[in-house]
Image (cartoon, rainbow, N blue to C red; front, side):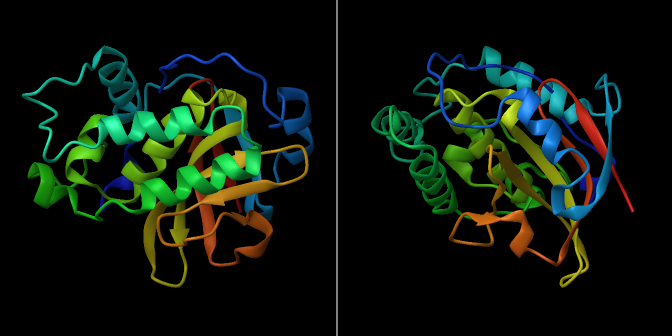
Length: 214
C-alpha cells in the first residue's frame, strides 16, 4: 500500500441479475458529500487510475485454469460457492458473509507476493495468494457485484488511517439508510458514522471517481 494514494482503478461487470435493497443512484444523492462526513467532488474518466483500469480488464478476461489456479492453493471454487449460497439473501446478510469470507485470507505485502511496492490483484490472484488492503476491498467489490449489487452502491475507498498514519483501503456500500464499511481490519460490517480515524482521500467504482475534500 505504500504507493496507494498515487495509483488506482476501473470497470468490469461480472454480470448480475436480481434487484436488491441497496441504494439506487437517486438515493445515493442524499449521501453525497457525506462519506465519513467529508465533502466530495465527483469526477469522470480514469486516466489517472491505471491500476483500476488494469484490474477490471484483467479480471474480465481471466479464466481459472489448473496452471493459474492450483487446486491445493486457489480458492476460486469456494468463492463461487459462497456467492451461490448467498443469492436471494438479505442485504445485511450478504455484506456480513462477503466480509467474513474475504477477511479469512492472509494479509500479504505486495512486495512479498509480486516483488513490487504496489500491485492491485484480481480476484483469482487474491484467492490464491492473499493480498493487502486494496486487494481485500477489490474482492469484496466483485463479490457483491456478482450478487447483483449495483455499481452505484459500491466504492473502493482509499483513506488515511489517522491512528496508524498510513494509507488504507476499504469498501463502502451504500444502502437507503446508511453507508456500511467492509474493512479487512475489522470483523464486523460497521456504519461509516462509527469510524472516526479514517480520512477519505478518493473513492471509485466502475462509473465514476470522487475526490474527498477537507
